[in-house]
Amino acid sequence: MTHAATVHSLWTTAAAAPDKIPAPHIEYGQLAPTLIVLGAAIIGVLVEAFLPRAQRYAAQLFVSVVSLAAAFAAVIGLAASDYGTGKAHVAAMGAIAVDGPALFLQGTILLVALVSVFTFAERRLDPVVHGNRVDNFAAQAAAVPGGEGEKAAVKAGFTTTEVFPLVLFAVGGMLVFPAANDLLTLFVALEVFSLPLYVLCALARRHRMLSQESAVKYFLLGAFSSAFLLFGIALLYGYAGTVAYAGIADVVDGQVRNVTPALAGTMGNDALLLLGGALVLMGLLFKIGAVPFHMWTPDVYQGAPTPVTGFMAAATKVAAFGALLRLLYVVLPGLRWDWRPVMWGVAIVTMLGGAIVAVTQTDVKRLLAYSSIAHAGFILAGVIATTPEGISSVLFYLAAYSFVTLGAFAVVTLVRDAGGEATHLSKWAGLGRRSPLVAAVFAVFLLAFAGIPLTSGFAGKFAVFKAAADGGAGALVVIGVISSAIAAFFYIRVIVLMFFSEPRTDGPSVAVPSPLTSSAIAIGVAVTVVLGVAPQYFLDLAGQAGVFVR
Image (cartoon, one colour):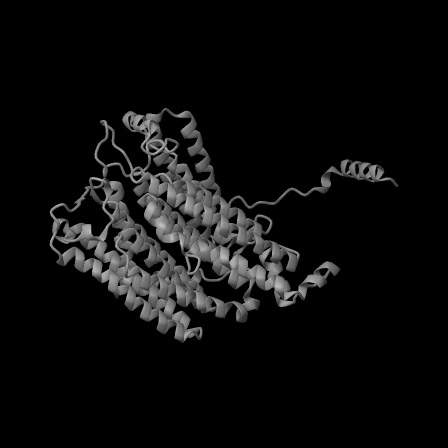
């Protein structure tokens, strides 16, 4: 039979049996949180296209807040229907896991995004320009910084309301990321939440060149890390012949029923497995900001608009740690003896590196960036525990840490001088005398970062270190405590600077925010205090949510 005839017979067979392609079976109800957010993001794009410019801000804010609240309600509904424990399963043809950790992390991400949207919508901090209230974002993102186009856009009172759909797209990707149950879904989710973040980082109204530089750095290094991840996925697929988490885990454990000749050829090749696993880990550690993949963090945190920095610092960490936990606990538990020593090393250099370099910082945003690197190291201690307590302690720490971070960056937006935000530490001297309330709130967040008792930071650190110690990583806990002590030095230093220094005559003023930013900061303080004073309910909640579906 000729080649053409073969193709023709295949075509006719396919045409004769049209019912052979099965329709995908999608559980829309269980994917509701993600679908609501992505649907709202598309509505946001349509709002930008069709509504007059004057009405867009209110419409976008309404769509964003309602959709995030509805998605959070959907997560609560799924958890109440027992999808976190008894009914946990793999939905969407094996692509998405609906289980305790996924729902817990999705709920955290949605709450973080909701509070972040309040800071994005803030319009009372900058002075009124040409009779228009303005926000933190560039008047016209496409205009050259300082050029005629930008001046005309500012004069006309333009604002970049596209930030709201961008945030929703990023949140949609973040919701899928920790719940992804195969490597391709993981990669698609990574790109879906990374690309909007690259754009958001470039949109600062003040210091636009610095902002654009930070976005380019983030984009180039992010593309680099995505390439590592994708190469790792290719190697793992070559090793196991599947991208599904359970399938790879079975091959790693040697529990495959029907071994094909091709699979038999690659199964024994540990080089593919170890290299693939290492490359995927590198991609995830980059998103977490662990040393030595942290170089982008301080520059991007400093250059990006502060509301974006707060959102990114909180939500990206939650999503990335969720994906890391699922990878290590579901796909590679059989490789525990290979990845634990590596993660030990990464955790140690991350804790010490973040804490020691932070001591030398003179910019508030860079200081918080290095502090976030140190915190990534503390959370990795819980990941290394490889016990159920390890998972639940990491979930709790992520929830606690994200609200402290959001609140801290929201406070940073309030301290301003003629050039916009005053982020140099010298300008914060004597802030406690000028504006005792703002300084006191910032002090609460700093004490929580330092892990002082009666704050959420202490409860989180205690849970993570206890899990690590019980999991046989006692030496790691000792290094963690030393790092915490080093870190406490620069947090306390900022508090001393604010309350015990003389205010400078040319010092910054504290802007009076609208109820939006005020409520974001108030929520941050409330969560910090409640999780610090009465953490048990939330620790139990994280404990119940700590079981991955296989």
